[in-house]
Image 1 (cartoon, rainbow, N blue to C red):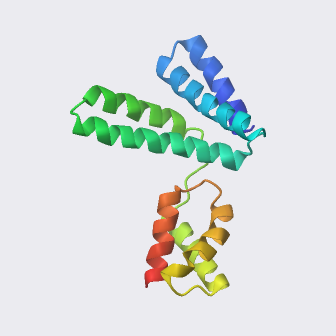
Image 2 (cartoon, rainbow, N blue to C red):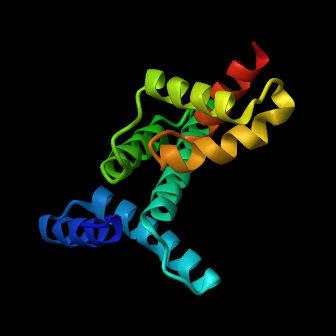
Image 3 (cartoon, rainbow, N blue to C red):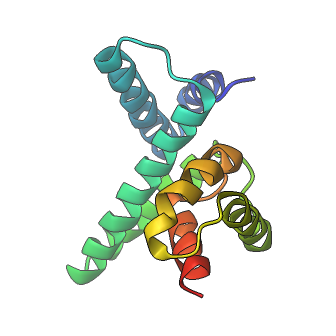
Length: 148
């Protein structure tokens, strides 16, 4: 079952059970997916949907940081609840060791030797990771291994 179908089913379940947080969060994720599909006039594949969900999670993490600065524990709690709802729809996270091995293989394959070669390595690593790790973690790993 694809992620969009799972999101729709989850929203229906949330509406039946009265789970307002899940209903609101899933509805926002579906709206973001629909907006991109309308803007690009295409249907998003699984990788793009996972990327959008990761973006939604990132937005909520940033909101948590802002809420902490503003001393708003109610907003922190709400955003954390939404993150827990969204994480269910992401593929199983890639272990850090597996990511490092993929990056090292890509570095060897491209012959990259300096941080300036990061683009070559990222081009090979990104399709293999397929949404199983956040982009900032991937780029930090690539940068770290190229800096050695």
